[in-house]
Image 1 (cartoon, rainbow, N blue to C red):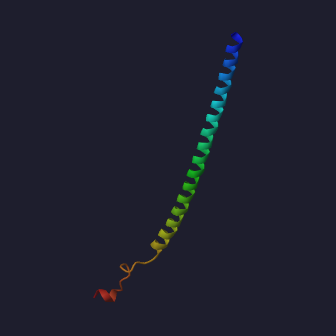
Image 2 (cartoon, rainbow, N blue to C red):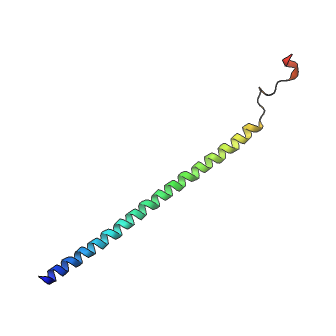
Length: 75
């Protein structure tokens, strides 16, 4: 009877260790996937911002028609 209890105890310990390692692996995989996706989102957002900043700079350099009114037309 004592030997059967020891065998069951070892089986429970083995199953617990396997479950813990599998849980750790799944969590790590999920974190890695999430990190990869968020890294991609951040990279794309950076490209969008860079493009916007460049276009904004070009727009600021252009003279608007409203700002360019010759003095002769005012009279």
